[in-house]
Length: 380
Image (tube, rainbow, N blue to C red):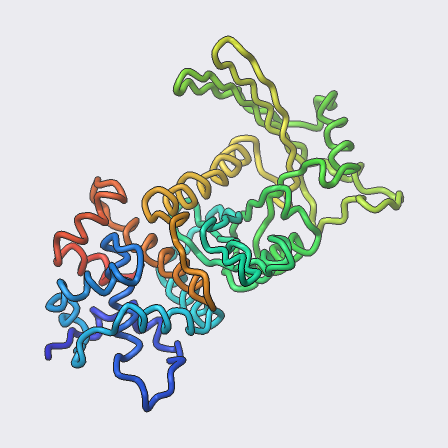
C-alpha cells in the first residue's frame, strides 16, 4: 500500500507522543490511522463516529495516500472507545506543540473564555455538561489551547492551568471579569505577557474606586480617543475609550478584602458606549485593569479583539461544527473530540481562498486534493 512522504504526515508527527490506550497485542487498527480518519472526516463535515466510519469507507483511497490501512477501518464503536480512552492531558500537550509551530513571532492579543457543550451531560451518572476554557489568538485566528473545568469547580481554576501551557511572551491576555483574580494576573506576568482584565461588581470595592475616578477624572491624568460610531442592523453605537496610567492612588496603606494587589498594575481604563436602537438609547461604562500602559487606540483594539473569541470561535463551533449537538458523554471522549474540532478549525481557517468556513468544509468533502492541502499545510 502506498504511504506518503514524511512531509505529508507533519501534523501526525506532532501527535506521535500519544500513547495507544489499548493493549498492544490487541491492536488491529493503529492509532495514527484512527486519528487521521477522525480528523479528515471531521474536516469534511462528519459529526459522529457512525458518519466518520461511513466517510472512511467511501474515501479509503484518499486515506491510503498517507497511511497503509492494511486492516481497513475500525467499527464506529471501536472509534468511540479509542477516542474516549486517549489521555486528554497528553493530547492537549501534543496540540500545544503543534499549534505553537503554526504561530508567528509577532505579539498578539490572546483571549481567554469558556464555553459549555450543552448536550454532553449524562445526568443519570451525575455528569454535568462539558465546560471548556479556550485560548484564542485573535490576530492569527488560532485556537491555542483548551482546559476543561472540574465538575466541582469553575473557570477560575482551569484558567491558570491553561495559561501555564501557553507561550505568552509579548502577548496581551484578555479575560472577562471572572478571570480578574490575582493568581491569574501573576501567572500571565510571570510567563512574559501582560493582562487586560475586565472589572465588574465581583470585586466591588475596586470597581467602585475606579468608577468614582472616571466619573470626574482630572484632565491631566487621562487620555481619551475620538469617539467611534458604528451603524449596523438598525443600531447606532458610539464608543469612547479612556485610559489612566497613574494608578498609585489606587494602592494605599488601606487593608480590605478587595484591595487591588495585582502584580505590575500599570493602567485602569474605561469604555463608554451609547447605543441607539428603535428610538431607545442605552448607555454603559465598562472598566478594566491592565499591566500594560496602552494608549486609547491600542486599548480599544484589544477590547474589540477579545470579543472575537465569541463570534470567531464559539459561534463557529456551534454553527459550523454543530458543537451543541455533540452527544459524547463518557470517559474523555467530550474533551478529546473538542480538541479534534479545534485542530480542524485551525486547519480550515488557514487557506487564503475567499470561501466561508462552511463552504471550505464542504469542499474538503468533495475534493480530495483540497482536503489534502488542508492537512499538509506548511508551518510558518
